[in-house]
Image 1: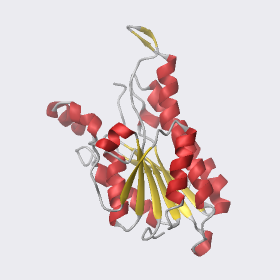
Image 2: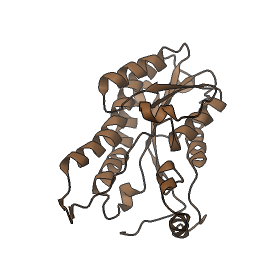
Image 3: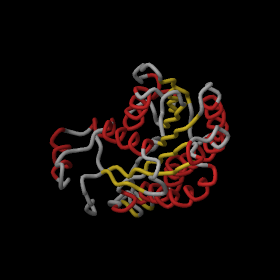
Length: 252
């Protein structure tokens, strides 16, 4: 599927994986609507072809309004890439007692329910566009994590949310097949995102040594490259692709 002269939504589009993907889509000729929180947008780079939209993905009304904006841009909405997410850690039973249920619910709300809501509301708009060859109308890419498979100590909530994204992939693809909408998921390993900017170089080097090959951390641009490859490849559907250098996480 070509992205030139189409609209695209990227959640979490002001930084990290989302920013790299938004920039790649814009460079390819798409009109990109980067959804993110106001504080994140304030520090986001200004890039031709990217329009930042203040959205909390846990707020259904905000998501609906933002999706309506993207769908009304004058070019067909064809692409959605869900990158918005959070990753606090807490053990089920820790020194301070049992896992906080509110934190667990928040992580599920942002990572899983937020992605589902954007997927659902955007799919409705994509389904109303003119069909392309073989009835194709668009593609939605969600972001899981290798933690969906190899969750570490303290990642019960995060792994639950990302495991939900993995489980959503095939039924969503089957549900939306009749509308010509593909659904794919990328499960990244350890990526050089702003979250890792707060740790020492020594710590990052230690993480990189655990990756079989290539023995380094992934880059956001590589996620974006994979997302664009998925968009371009019309026969990829209903599958999760691990982007992790064959890393399998240890318990801690």
